[in-house]
Every structure is written in C-alpha cells, then in structure tokens.
Image (tube, rainbow, N blue to C red; front, side):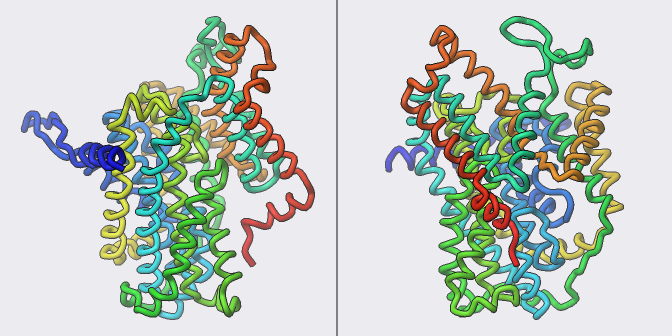
Length: 515
C-alpha cells in the first residue's frame, strides 16, 4: 500500500509539475505543461465525440504529428485524454441527435434519445457524466493497483512467451472483431505483411520495396494510421447523406433527482465492473462492454419493456461500461506492451516514435511516464465532468455545424500534419493512397482496425520470433516446451476453434445488434 501511494504521489507530481518552456519574447518560463496537455486532450476528445463522423482513432492519428514537439509523457497524456474524452463526448451526440459520436455510444442512443424527446435530455446527460466519472475513477484505481504486479509478472516473459502472447492477442482481436472471422484474419495478415516492408535490420536486405527508395525505411506508422482512419473516415462520411435529428425540446436541469440516482446506482456499479473487465480484452472488448451492460440491465429489470422507451438504467450502465473499458484497455499496453485495440495501437506507435519500447520496462525505466499517465486519468475524468456539463450549450451549437464545412479543414490538417513529420511529399500521397484503401475496405465489409493491430504487432512478433529461435538454436519446439508459452498458444487455439463453431459464430454476430 505504501508503494502504491508513493507511486501515485510520483504520478501526480509529474502531472502537476512545472516544466521550463522557452516562450518567444518571454524567455524560459516554468509552466504546468502536462496538466495543460491533459486539459487540451480532454477538450479535443469531447469535441471529437460530439461531432459525428470523426472518432478518437481518426483524431489521434491526425494529431500524432503535433505530439512530436512534446516530451513522451506529455504527448501520451494528451493522446489518452483524447481517447477517454471521446467516450464522454459520444454520449452527448447519442442523446441529443440519436447519432453515436463514437462506436461505444451506440447503445446510449436507444434510451438516451428517447429521454431527450420526453424533455429529460439534461438528466440523461447528467447521469451519463456522473456514471462515466465514477467508472473512470474506479478504473484508474484498478489500473494503479494491478499495474505493478502485472509488470513484475511480465518481467519473467522471454521472447518465446512474448511471441505467444502476441499470437493470443491477435486471436482475441479476430474473435472480438465485428463481421466475418475470415475477413478479420485477412486484415491481420495484411497488417503483418505491411510491417515487413523496408530494410531488414539484421541482414540489411530490402524487403518488398519494389526498388522504391522511399520504402526502404518501411511504411511510416503515422502515414498508415492517418490514411486508414483519418482520410478513409472522411470519404465514408461523404458517402452518406447526413441527417441530424437534433432535439427541439429544452435541455432542462442537468442534476438527476434522488429517484434517478437511486435507479442508476446499481447499473453504474455493474457497468463499471463489466466494462472494466471487457476493456482489457484485445479486439473490440471496450466496444463490447456497453452492449453487455445494456443486455444485463435489461435482463435484471422488473419491466424490460421500458428499455428503448427512455429507461435511465439504459444510459447509466452502458455509459459507465464504456468509460471503464476505455481506461482499463491501457492495462495490457502499459504492463505488457500489447495494444488491445486500434487506439492503443496508435499509442504504441506514439511510444516507439518517441523512442520508448512498450512493455514492462516502461515502469522501471520510465516511472514518471507510467505513473504520470495513471494520475492524469483521474485528473482528466474530473476535467471532463467540468467540461461536459457547464458547456452543454456550446456542444449543442456545434452539433448544428454541417459536415461539408468540416471535412476540408480535417483534410488540410491531415496533409499539413503528415508533411511536417519528414517534409516528404510522398507521405501526403501515401495518406491519400491508404485513405482510398481504407474506404474500399469499409465498403466491402472489412474492418481496418485489425490491420493496424497486425501492423503494430507484426514487427514485435518478428523480433521476438527471431530472438526465441536464436536462443533455442533454431528449434521451433521452444514455443511449446516453455509452459507459459504453451499455455498462451493453447488459449489462442481454443478461442479460435470456439469462434469458428457455427453456434458460437451466430451468437457472436448478434452481440453487437440490439433489437
């Protein structure tokens, strides 16, 4: 307990600490830069969640170039703020416009918008914010509590165990991905294939560059992410006729009544637990949390027919699950270096760009970054409570901005951002190329997120595979002779076999659909 408090003290010291910044005209001025970046991340995340058609993955991909100017701790604090801020903001759009600003807010539209139509939009927004704040605080404490033990466990992992762990992570990503399992496998394999492009670091041979010099360093992570999610998302949104059903009724009071709080208390606690557990799972675990919470609340309700008609439990549970899942998804990233979803894959990309190797060494070698990020989550949740409720009028006005006015600015921002990294015109062409690929994938029913996971984990898998084979002198049996490695591979095979069973496949496809 003493170590935990000391570590949290280090984290809060990192977040609130003064950092000397050279300001033109004023010289070097000490300012609380990390707390400012946390606020900017939360504000941008809320904006991203409120405006339909952007999403946290696209936003983080677009903002990656900006973070190169900051130190790694500040950069990751800001990116994390965007992620869990988008979970908050997504509920505003879901309740007021009946359009989920983020995938995890899909369930909130079912009862949240019905509450808004009945003149209870303020109460729905208020309970969503309270539930999210509670869930975020509990998830942060959970991360702080399990972070150190999991990191100590991870230190016993060797190259063989890490390779098997990544195989298991990719299998979970396949099982929990939306749509066809075969398509998800294909996307992961394409991502791994993309990760092999460039110069082999051990042999110095160029691989799959087709004689093109600009591919000798491999495909740039920021370019791939910005194209697949930023540009592709713009094209996808332009392909749809935009209809926004903004509620005409007054927002009303934001503070729920005592009866509302009583009805919501248990769903908030259950949603926090469900979302926190599922958020750790690779793939769509964080997205699955709100759906699972809604299903549980509907099963436990005395009158299930109320759901879909404006039941406050249908807002409280899923919103708590969604925020808890967003934050516990940092656990495998910070302790094992394994990204459980596309946003965490972007975080891995940001860490490697800043020269930080994701994994258990982060806690020992970069304690300020590890505990600073955890402390920033609690501070960020408090900021989001302040940002969301008093500024609801501003978010309502922003909801009326047509998307046709936003997309040129987003596209320009993408182009300028990607060019600023390496000053290469080819990078701008590449984001357009990957944007077109991403758009085609979406049109043909393929999900781009597994591709990004495959790309990020592909390099790590190759590296650990080679290390394991060098240590074992080329003996492939090393992966099954080591008990922990064997256990991870067995779990992966069992999960894949179960997912391919017709009965499991059918229920898996129905999980993301709510009647």
